[in-house]
Picture (spheres, rainbow, N blue to C red):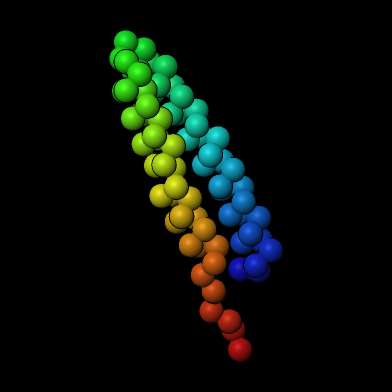
Length: 71
């Protein structure tokens, strides 16, 4: 796969991941955390703010892997 195409796909995937993840995290926060206190809000947003990094790392790892060159 050409590197430019790979970077385009990776960029689109990362942007889509952030948008979808933010929508899901916000929906969970609005529906589930309304009756809880500030500590629960803090812990939820701390964990959800860090959790998106795991799939993003997978996408970035895929981006930097060298594809085998054909001779």
